[in-house]
Image (tube, rainbow, N blue to C red):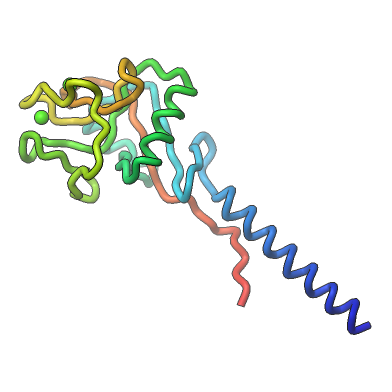
Amino acid sequence: MIRSSCLGFAVCVFCIGVIQAQVKEAGICPPNWKHHGSNCYLIVTGPMLNWRDAVNYCQTVSAEIIEIETVEENTYLKNSLLHNHTTVDIWVGATDARQEGHWLWTNSQQPVKFTDWAPNEPYQGHGFECMTLTARQGFRWNDEDCNHKWGYICKKEALNEGTIIIG
Ligand SMILES: [Ca+2]
Ligand SMILES: [Ca+2]
């Protein structure tokens, strides 16, 4: 009797552990958003918008235009766009509008730390104050005229509402 209840308890703890792991792995993203790490990503390739409208659109879906925080995330995004056979450039949330050549992530106002500029970028200087991932260079980074219309990526944290908390 004691042995079987111990076994039952062990199985129960094991099951909850598995459920937790699965929820954490899956996260919760809205339909059509991609889940990666602890975040959800919405890649929009049409209708295309200028940079400011893309920033505003992301806020309407309770997200922010993407800030690329790590090299790993940058690689994930490039691979996703290549995998999707994306043919348009993609706005991200960096700008040097405040000070030419001094790139900031617009939401956090943090300086861009690591970089992945395409060859000979950024080179257009004044009038080219917004960053794209450029299709013609495998989605490496490019300075672009903010008024141009391109695709964009919104990002928000994945929810883990289903997580079972023990103790
Ligand atoms: Ca510039
Ligand atoms: Ca450029």
